[in-house]
Amino acid sequence: MDKRTQIVNTALALFYNKGIHAVGINEVIQAAKVAKKTLYNHFSSKDELICACLVVRDERFNRWLKAQLIYAKTPFEVADALFNALSLWINNQVDELGNFNGCFFINTAAEFPLETDPIARLCSKHKQTVLKIIYDALILTTQLKESPAEAEQLSKLLMTLKEGIICQARVSKQPQTLLLDKTILKKLIA
Amino acid sequence: MDKRTQIVNTALALFYNKGIHAVGINEVIQAAKVAKKTLYNHFSSKDELICACLVVRDERFNRWLKAQLIYAKTPFEVADALFNALSLWINNQVDELGNFNGCFFINTAAEFPLETDPIARLCSKHKQTVLKIIYDALILTTQLKESPAEAEQLSKLLMTLKEGIICQARVSKQPQTLLLDKTILKKLIA
DNA sequence: CAAAAAGTAGACCGAACTGTCTACCTGGCA
DNA sequence: TGCCAGGTAGACAGTTCGGTCTACTTTTTG
Image (tube, rainbow over all chains, first blue to last red; front, side, top):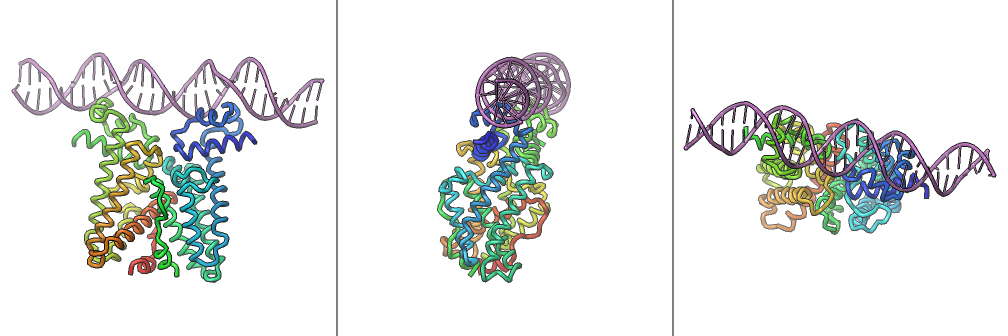
């Protein structure tokens, strides 16, 4: 495997599970079985490595999420697919996303509060992208094809629910069943 | 003012705005205008100071939230009051909560991922307390007085929406108008 | 094959961190 | 008046951090 991706994958797993400030460069190179110089050959600083991790996570998460929503034919199915996907993720049944530890971008943003920081910017950008993915899934349904305003409103709502579910699952770690009752979903959408 | 509360207030403001790992003890004592020995007279370690901050923030936030919900007579009014309160907070119109920077407990939990850590425990406990505050407000309404199951379901939903709103407001910092349309609220509750 | 590029191991530097300690000061109270 | 708990200022120790550098080895490539 390419050394660079080897480093990024290792660092991403460590950062995601332990938090970024809690993981030093030395721990990364030890876990990645790589010399320190190799790391600094590929990344000029820890911050740059963090950004690379964010980019990789962003791509991976988006690909996964799109795949979960692609077969939904109605707004209700979009919502249903979304929350089923979240449930799988939270209960550690999605290999490609690793052991659930909340949203990597929310966690990271909490560690880098300065808005102008490139790291914080990537976190913010990720959220916009996810919102667009949900919006796109909704706008592809026959019901909302001609209702961008409605699709926008609903995508925002789903996004808010998603964030809330993830945050709660993160803080109270017990592997929980789906937080959202389907009767509620039906009220919202049907 | 009592030196201890002076230290905690200063530390809380710094931790909340900049993140905990990003703020050193030296910065705290300088901002609090206090000698290092004084700090370590009152707190045996930084972790203990962090816990004290979490406790104070917990009390302060709960008191504020309860006051916001106390006049609501119907479930809809509870929800409405909750989201109005959040809107005020996010737009920095609530002095006692400081400059909005998301949920201090979510942020802090992100910096201390180990579940067994007393710090993480306090974060988790805070979320349970807030959920109970919302539940209590709902159960006091005439509509839900005799429906604990319904009150529980609705409180969870409101909690999820609240967390989602806060997280989104945190990550994309632009001071935003209320994310939740009242028509949606009515669908959910009426 | 030979040169260049990339990787390894780890010593090392300066900075920053938490936490301790000394030496001195101050203000309230017996 | 004299005592003393609690405050101040800051040097200091010990650790850890990010990042650089040297010396050597491996891999790739013209």
